[in-house]
Length: 384
Image (cartoon, rainbow, N blue to C red; front, side, top):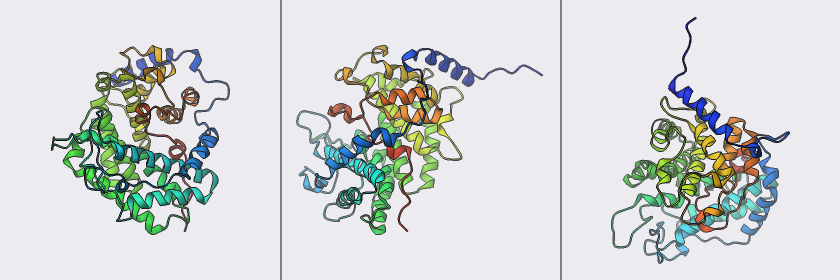
């Protein structure tokens, strides 16, 4: 039989895996009985209940309760600055985190108090005509005096992706009626329509960095929630033909993140966004975790490239971030998702050692997933 020769893709993959595997070091080798699928419910049990119990004490704060320069129902934010308006952005972040905490606690305990409180928040934000948010980001990342819309505002609602992931976990509660669940899904369907048809969202989609991946993750999460198979199919195509090629080079790095003032933070942020997108877009018929470009890497190489930098920040070979470099890394969900996808227990062991609850605002805003339990388990069956 004639000798077979490796393709460039298989050669690069094997070489990269060998190189990065060699540099993981003894400290990251899997311990005896280590699992690539750790029990997230047990690991996070106490922190979930602590966060959810705190959330029970916090009242609902929809956008209409926060005076902004725009329409009370429209999301409004301004580009970063000393006097920038960020109240809506902060409200979205806090609201999304609380829903994730409450949904995770409801899943663990079946205690309807958690679901009931989440339902109150969801009703105010997505259903009640008096307080409902307009499902678009036309007025996000505004620069006062500049009428031009800015795509950077897509990042302001990236935390809605986890909120959308949390909603099915609340569906079995008596506190969330079938009618209200349908109305919430209708809101996300409208938001997905805006994300996939507006010119502003298209500008975000085409970015070759975390802005583009934020668009991808949000679109995937909302399409999954609303069971929009046509959009999911388009997003899988986008992931394979555009996202990987535009964002990743052969070595597995994100070149467009490395030129920012926060190359380390943004690289890990983008890694989490990309891994979460891969998780949502993979199906029983197609695993995007295994996809590789003919002339470049897939996500396996990207993860392998970044794991040593997460294990030891000092090995980061590029310039340090302008601030909070020493406060990273945190418990990147990409480690957990990749551990499960590639059966790499050492990734899961590293994930368990890291801080799951960053409190520094700049870091928390680049930590898109706070409750991985909602991403690694299935919700209870909804009520009949």
